[in-house]
Length: 444
Image (cartoon, rainbow, N blue to C red; front, side, top):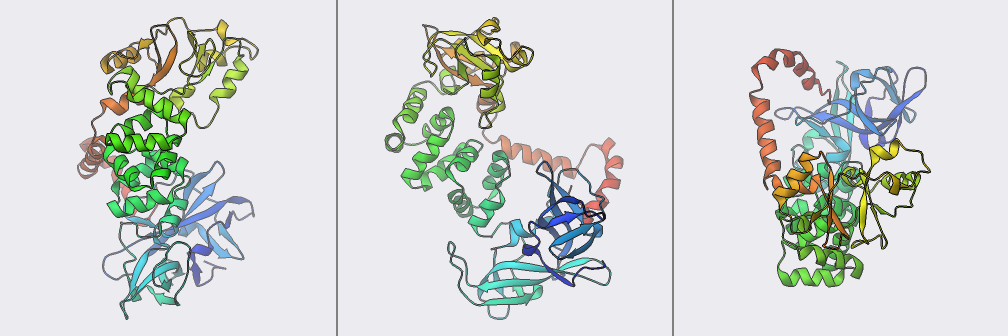
C-alpha cells in the first residue's frame, strides 16, 4: 500500500474523508472491523466502515484502501453499496473496544483502552498491533492515571463478545441505530451492563427503546432509574406504552410515578389504565393525527410528515368536530394518506372521508379488533365512546405486541440459529460461494 504509514491509530481515522483516485469524496470513516483469531495471534484488520451519502454505512475492505495519510483515506473507488451488517465473528474497534477495561499482563493492573493501532505486514495484510491504555478505569469524564503504549500481547480482555467499554461512549455510538435494534442489544447484555447503558441514553431515546423491550426488561430498567427521571421517560413514551408499563408495577409505585408526571400526560395514562388490558381501550393510543373537516389536504400531509409519528399513525388522519384532543368532539370519519396524495392540496379533508371505516367501542375484545383490522386491510382503527367521540386509535403494531408470545424475540433468535446450522438443503449449494468472503471480513 503505497503512501500508507506503517502504523495507524484507529480513533484518529474516525470522521476522515474517503476519496476515490480522482479525489472525489466517497464517504467518511466511522469504524474499523477486526477479526479475532484463535490463541494469541493478533487480530486481523479486514476493513473500514464508511458512511456514504444517505447516511448508509458500507464496508470498505482493506484491500481496496491504497493510502491513509494527510487526514484522508484513498480507496480504489470500488465500493460495495450494500448496507454494512456486522457478523458474529467481527468486532468494531471504535464501537466495541474503546473504553473497554483490560488487564496489563506484567503487573495485573486494570487499564482502559483509549486507542488501538493497526499495522500492515509484508503480506499486505493488516493486524492490530498496539494498544494505547490509561491505567485505572474511567469514572464519568475524569481521565487520570499513567498512559502506556503496549503490544497486543501485553494486555488481556480485549477480545470477547461482551461489550465492556464505557456506557457513555457506547450510547453515543448507538445514536444512529433504530430503537428496536438497541432494544435487542440491551436485552442480550448482563443485568448490570443493561442498566449502565440505559442510564447513559437520553430520555427520548430510552423511551423509544423501552417501547421495544419485553416487559421484564422494561420493569427492571424503569425501577432502577431515579423516580424523577423515570417519570420523565414515561412522559416521553406513547401513552398506551406508558400505561402498559405502569400496569406491571405495584400500585404504590405506579401512583408515585403518575404524581411526578406532568398532569396532562398523567391524565391520558390514567384513563388508559382504567381499561382492560386486552380490550380496544387498553390497546389504543390517545395521540393519533386529528384535524377538523375544514383542514386542507396540504395541512394534513404536513401533519403526517412529522418524524416522531410511527408509520401506522402517519397512515391516516381522523377528522373530528372540536375539541381536537381526545376525547374529541364527534368523529366524522377517516382520511387515508393514499387518498390525500391523489387530491389537490387545497381540497378540504372533510370532503374525502372514507365512509367504510367503522369505529369500535372501548370494551371491544382483542379478537374483534384483530379481525376488523384484517378484514378491511387497515393499519389503524378508531375507538369511540357511546356519543361518537374519538377516544383513541388502535394500530396494527399495538395488536401485534399483544398477540405475539412474550418470548417472541428469543424464539426468533433460536429459529435463526437453527436455520444457520442446518439451512434448507436446496439453498446450500448457492450459499457456499458466498461464505468464503466472510472469513475475509466482508462485513455484509
